[in-house]
Image 1 (cartoon, rainbow, N blue to C red):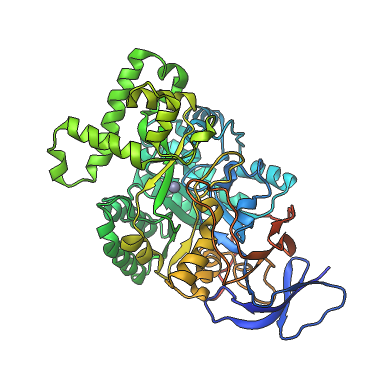
Image 2: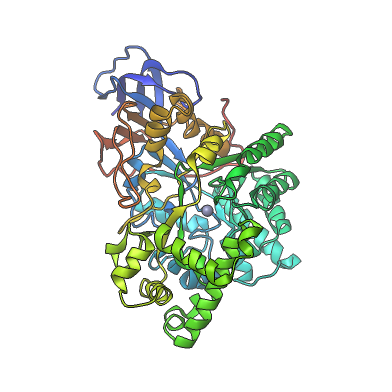
Length: 552
Ligand SMILES: [Zn+2]
């Protein structure tokens, strides 16, 4: 049956001003836009005093890790998201072989507390599995570089030989032919952290051949963001002649905030010189990460429980952990801090961890979710020293402790970056099926429209919508979505611009937003009157070689 959206104010995703019209949908396509449309026998949505916009596209999302467990993806559909770019940061469930499976069992499942992950030999295998199960949102996949490297080199920390590089290129080629939109990297942690720039350039040349993009969690997001981070990405984009995307763009850490104007002018200059580089961002000051990932040396993961129980090994871990924290934190600090006595710095770091690091989610003791680390450890291990309690906590939660802490500053950095017209919105969230999560997974898009547009007036509603629809569609080269025009696919959101707002908090991240009435995916109503009704009309979107960009 046709769907007729009546009396709405259309914001079409191109940045053009809102206008009043009705929208008629037939099957999965927008077939008519005009005043006072009437059609017999159709489902009518009254959009009076509502905005009718293209479905939101999340440029950066980790939903692929759990989509088969949460195929309704309600956390995102309820925000108005109809398409998500997944397998980002170099991490994903395909492609895989035995080496990759071992790496994920030893390392990734513990890092994220994700439980057992089922991996697939190829992206095509995973696509089949997802399509058979059915999903609510559309997904566009990137090829995770971590898997590509691990398939060939395992976790070896060396550059590939000529033959190995050829093997990696072949895997990338296979992924692009399956319909991936590009290559994603995570260069701050293994195995991406050991990849050389040259390796990435060679792989990107293959991606370029298929018209895909290079999407990167850069090697440095702190005080080295201009050189080690953006500098490397710009070199890759230039030498491989490829369009590039900066994932979760940020000036991370108090000493990097002052670099914000330089980050903007660098990217503007490079774009003016003709390189096609974009970025995506989420509107939160706290980032999320894995506590075991930032604290524990990689060898601990191989025999996790035993290593974290044996007293002698624990001593070794404490030493190495402290050295890691020490070098990570101090590398960004002014020289003045480096001459302070080590024991004083230790005290400062411990105090920071106790009071500023917040537990988002754990595997077992859910009652500590939302608390700060110090409170959590006092609750669970009242008689232990901080370091002993911390190691017990990591062991008892099997490593799966996600934490958040403030690394960005809205006024000094986020606002200036996000206002740039080449910045799209990407939540960097996960789809969780139990426990708490970072508020961005339930609130990122409504926060932009409620808080950044309506309350803070950082940009117009039309521009806010463009950043989450027309712009990401253009970045990806998806010509038939992201805008409301006749002939385009019917991914649509109907919301109240005066009411839309995020409700999720760090203490309770799993709260749906307000103000979103209807969400339509491929012409099927998925959210009706503010409730997810279980529709599974999402698709795996595949990139074809001759996919064009639409004009904006
Ligand atoms: Zn990332």
